[in-house]
Length: 85
Image (cartoon, rainbow, N blue to C red; front, top):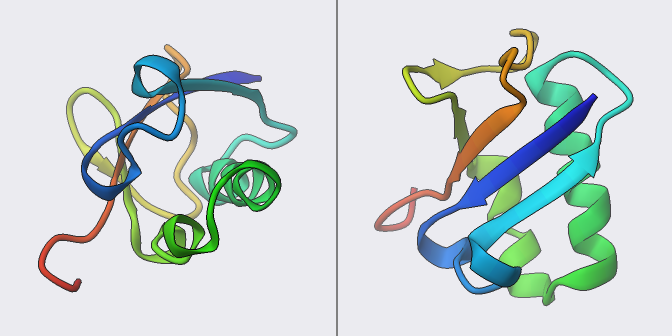
């Protein structure tokens, strides 16, 4: 499934227009997080990668956790921690 990630906060400016599309080989938020970490390890500075385990993922309407299914529209918002966590 193709997922479009939209970045905010500390992750802004890492990709053009703060949007990144990746093919995900799973169906859950955890699968999307793993794919994003894998991409980031190859393309981003280490200090930006370190926030990914603590980022929240959301659809247009709600926060999404671990084993929840990816949104049908294929869009995820990535929200890094604020003020240290």
